[in-house]
Image 1 (tube, one colour):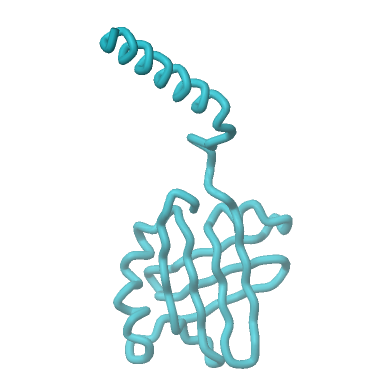
Image 2: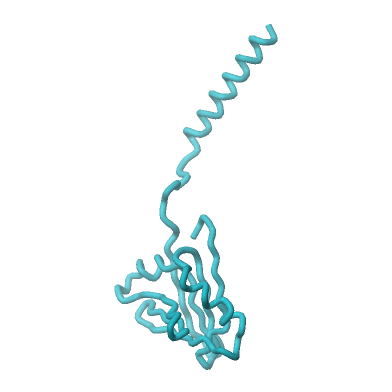
Length: 131
């Protein structure tokens, strides 16, 4: 009798797990990343963040973001406004050290900020299943 109860318990458990998976809702497997982009300028610092899909999907058809690895500058156009900064060989060495990674960055979230002189002051990349 114990073997029969265990087999029945296993079958019931498998059935309940199957039902749970069927009713689990939208898992978004294979769905594209969330597209978003934002930039702003203030008197002391400016920044852009988001992902390339967010810039491409902006309502302004001229929107873009990019890292120019030949001339070492970042440029973006979003919602009718241009944003740029230049990488310095002496200031903000962390940005200069990370700059080679821009050639292989394709997806994910990036964050770029620059100072009042237009020198890129911070660069970060984030890759996760959400981006």
